[in-house]
Amino acid sequence: MTNTIGLYWFTQDLRIENNPLLQRASQEVDTLICLYCFPKMTRFITHYAQEHRFSAAKIQFLSQSAKCLQKSLTALGQQLVVTTSTPYAKLQRIIHDHSVDHLYCDAFVGTDEKQVLRQLKEQFPSLIVTQDHVRSLFRKSDLPFELNALPSTFTQFRKQVEELDKPARNTTTTRLPPPLQIQFEETWPKLPPTQPALFEGGELAGLTHCQRYFSSPLPQHYKQTRNELDGMDYSTKLSPWLAIGCLSPCTILSMLAEHEHQFGRNESTYWISFELLWREYFYWSAMKHGARLFRFSGNKPSAPLTSFYPQRFLQWKRGETPFPIVNACMHQLNQTGFMSNRGRQIVASCLIYELQLDWRYGAAYFETQLVDYDVASNWGNWQYLAGVGADPRGSRRFDLNKQTQHYDADLSFIRRWQGHCSHAQTDGVDMVDWPIVPQKGNQESI
Ligand SMILES: Cc1cc2nc3c(=O)[nH]c(=O)nc-3n(C[C@H](O)[C@H](O)[C@H](O)COP(=O)(O)OP(=O)(O)OC[C@H]3O[C@@H](n4cnc5c(N)ncnc54)[C@H](O)[C@@H]3O)c2cc1C
Image 1 (cartoon, helix red, strand yellow):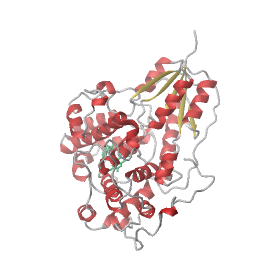
Image 2 (spheres, protein in one colour):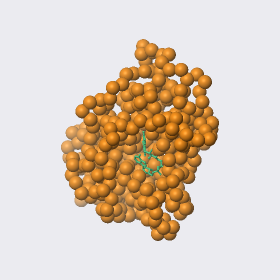
Image 3 (cartoon, protein in one colour):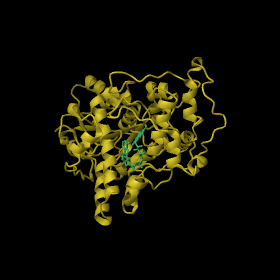
Image 4 (spheres, rainbow, N blue to C red):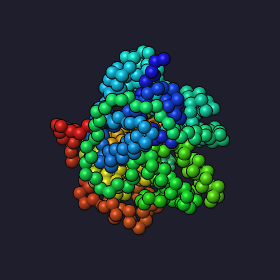
């Protein structure tokens, strides 16, 4: 009998519980290698974000999550190989050196991971690749339509999927095949000094947060509070753990059902599942549209009319625009790695409609900063607001004064995050000053 060797490539599925793909791997191979590669700044992101590295908050959250997974795998007799090398380099080396037969990984939305997989399949034609939708609520086969017939608006999508039985994927892996008896070299990103973090990374912390939230009365008022700008309790704050798969949306929905059983079902508790369907819609939309997610024209035949103003972009990133509410939100993002949904809509509208910049610069900057960065939700929401995505209304411009009156009437949010900027003049830097961030040698690549 030959010994089958599997390789589980963890990406945005950093969990053991409710991970059907890991369970499948545990049943199919004799020996298993578990690998996690920290995300890297790509040329595309460096160019559009005009940044060389991810935020400290994001690196810290990812590191904590990888450490937690490593601990859980060790408790199951496994080990997690952690690296800052590029996924292709590491994967192809392991597959080659250890004669790996099976590769297990997410059914990726992101184009970079898809490209890595294409290259590996070419290089190792006999490698058996098993993918699954480990981050979404539904699998492709659960959807009541073919992917290319995905409804063009969220409402049509919601109406078709809302009544479907929610997939019960209550899998807990309690046994795993042993690891290869080899000491792999590990590399971790250097952690820049950080402020106390808002979120602790890892499956354990995510489950604890989820349990705390749903065993409290907070979900009963979610719909009334969800648009607030500041604080931990106005919305679920599940997105950081969801984004890198420390939590499965199936786990969240089953905790929501328990909450409804205990406290009662109302419009607010329904609205949490409604918002999770937005996430689901952006996921399938990204799956359908592929690289169009990153195109200036998005899903539309023509691109918006914009010019490029380097200084405006820099001011927006630093929170030095003439709009205090925008500045406050950007300071909050830069200091914590998080911003409310309302804040994201406000700053995105400002970048697109007041500063008249290409929406992709904003989306890329968010990618470098957000602890809950999710490729489909981020780029999908930016497209939506820029009028090149799934919005039936065409575009969404927010009146910044009205938003301030409505969501920060006493200006306490602006004061707390120092939104007033005394030197908010625009357009003092010329195109020739591009790029606006000096190129440095020896940069951290993560
Ligand atoms: C320009 C822009 C960029 C965004 N980028 C991201 C991103 O990178 N990652 C991300 O997870 N969300 C993103 N969102 C969506 C939303 O802002 C966050 O999901 C939400 O603020 C996270 O906080 P929460 O978990 O407390 O959300 P809650 O209000 O408690 O919602 C519960 C869950 O529903 C989902 N959800 C809520 N609103 C949305 C939405 N508009 N689109 C998709 N899913 C949603 C999230 O998974 C969230 O955790 C973006 C929104 C905008 C306008």
